[in-house]
Each structure stands twice: as C-alpha cells, then as structure tokens.
Image 1 (tube, helix red, strand yellow):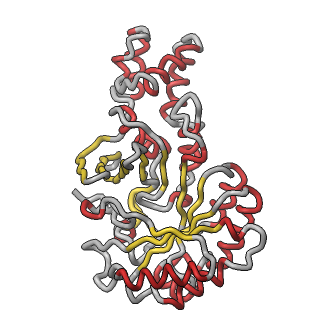
Image 2 (cartoon, helix red, strand yellow; image 1 turned 180 degrees about the vertical axis):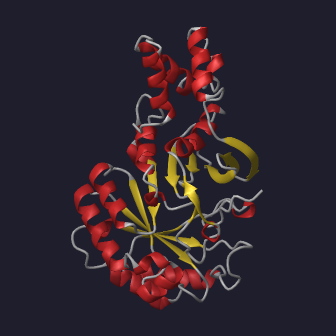
Image 3 (tube, helix red, strand yellow; image 1 turned 60 degrees about the vertical axis):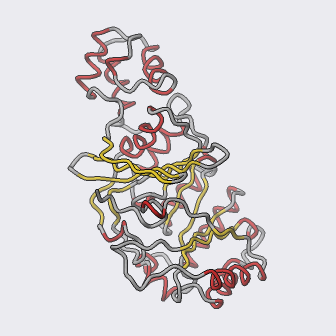
Length: 343
C-alpha cells in the first residue's frame, strides 16, 4: 500500500492512538460495505477516535469534490475539483446488462501532446496522487453505484505517473475496493518501463497499446512519444508481455478520415501483427471512431462509414482479430480523446 495514502494514514492514527487492531477493519467496513462517507458517522468507533480521524484526515472520506455532473444515455461524466484549484474528469459507462464501468484519470492534463487528443492541449498540470486516482471510484461507490470494472483511459498517461501502481494496489486490496486484476484495464501510448513493470508485477491487468498509425514517421507526427519508443520496440515488449502472461493485448486505433484510415494503413497493421510467433493470436485491434472537439485541429474528422467498412474488411481478410468500439458519451464530450476538464 502507498505510504501517504489515506488508508495508510488511518493505520497511523490508530497506532498513535493505541487503538485495538480491529478498528481498521471497522473503518474499512464502514466505507466499503456500509458506504459511510464521513468519519463522524462511523458510530461503531469511539467519539474520541472519530474526532481524531476528522482532525487528521478531514470530515469526508472522499478527498475530491464533484463540481459538475452531466449525463446522457448510458453515460455520466463528473468534473472533480482537486487540490491546487485544478480539475479532472471521470466517466461512468452503464451497459444495458447492468454492468458499470469507469474511465478514470491518472494525471491532471497530459504532457505528451498527441495531436488528436483534447486532454493533450492542456499540457501536464501534475500527476494525481494514489488517493486522487482511487477517490474517483470511491465517489461513485459511496453514492451507491457498483464498481464492476475500471479503465485508466481518462486524462493523462497512466504509466507516466508512478503513483498508478500504488493506486492499483489500493483498488485490488481485498480489504478496500477488492477489484480483481482482470477487471482493470490500463491504456498506454507505449512507455516501455511501465509496460515491463506491469508484465512483472501485475500480469493479469488488461493492457491496451494506443497505436493510431502503423508508420513510424506518421505516428511520430501524431504522437511525439514515438520518437522515443518506436512501434516495433513497443511491439517487441508486448510480445514478451504475451509470452509471460498468456493474456490478450489490445491495440487501440483511432480512425481519422484521410489521415490513417486507408487500405494501406490496414495492410501495414496486419504486417506488424502477423508473424509475431505463438502469441500473435492474442493481439486484438479495437477501432475507435474519432471524436472531434473544439480544441483539437479541425482537419481531423471522423472516418465515414464506407471508409471504415473497407478498413475493417482489409483487416479481416488478413485474419486480424478486431472490434469496432461502440462509442458512448460523444454528445457530452465523454468519449475517447474528449476529456478536457472545462466547466
């Protein structure tokens, strides 16, 4: 568990107050089983301990504050205020079969400057703490929602924030959120040290690589990170991930009309993913329709249906496993690449 997280601080308060060891379980059960969001309302605890918790940690268990919430069909988006007068966004997806999934932010803004992404236009304000990351889910939990799965696909690059691993530990701690590793998906633009650590320490977490072009020169133009970690270098590390974990790797591919949605691009993706050895069948391409915003270049447009169909057919003809991602929340700027944290 992260040193400095609220859960670690609770343990410290209990130790300093010479409380019996079962008090920690009482507190975590109050939060995660009874959904009590204020320390003062944890009436199973002595008043003196409740006072001490409020004094040390503040009145509310959840440390981020919802500033605005908007909803549309199957999607809700919450704008949270965080320390330093900054804001982040979190998206809840509600599927028809009752499953609730969450797209959480790992950074306030993002410093990698991918040309098609609204978040990238903000620049990096700062990394979120492990509490700020997990509090996005805690907010929904305390308000009665089930936490079925979570993806680190919100604002920022998760693997650029070292606190992400502490957050994963909190989310998977059976005494806290208790999420299974396979209920967590992490998306990366290809930061190799972080991928290698995931492979070693969190092999069951679902991994998505944001490719968006199979050509190094074009990808470097769209995503400057490619100058540091080329497509082939990333795929080599993903091959190792597949060999060691036996788990699928997802390739996210945003379709931009006239930019990266040609048959030539589809064939090049197939060339990259075929001939990768015994694990090549575990690569799965997710095609994502582009979502325009007022802060991304007007030259980027959504591929039309016929171009998308031709792209899909070209991949299928080469035996590439793929899915066209259903888009939720475009109307409230809650879809992929649209998170901007503006009121």
